Length: 241
Image (cartoon, rainbow, N blue to C red; front, side, top):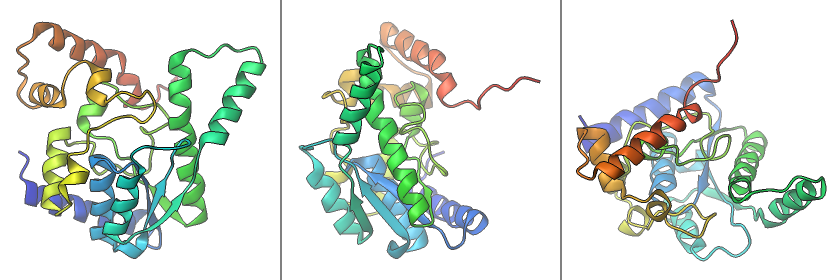
């Protein structure tokens, strides 16, 4: 059962234990979008380790209309931060791939920035003796709303057992300003909100995950189908033998 104050304390202890066992001198590295998941993850890490041991990495792709949220978040938490604009890298990679004779489809183009961002996070992590935080939540993972080897990657994952609704509540428990927990979730890649991309709301998805209830049969079938076809994103890689 999700009990906000207990869950908060449990995750903070879990983060402390993870770093004690996997790098007592290491820092947490968090990709910052300014939305609830990255904000809550960064806040949990700052509380568990101290703000001085958390690095936030802002990764706009050219001009990002909502980057002010990210800047406000790192300022609010008092964490060290870097801004790395990935536009030139993404554009160059797409150009080189297409010049090789490969015709990229829309999905390939959408996924490239997410994978470039994860490459950036690991480069920063190597430079600052870090461990990269995965910021995905249970709702996203359940329907595969993440990019494999992109935002689905990481070294430790504080939120992957919490639904999107529970992450919001956890943010309030951490005393984060509502502008971060209530920011409309969007992937920053397609120009659409998460819910526009999915075709259903997180409230509907979360109720189905936690209670097994979904009144709209067509939505239930879509959630089930997405869950099934995207399991490869969260399962260990199959190995022969």
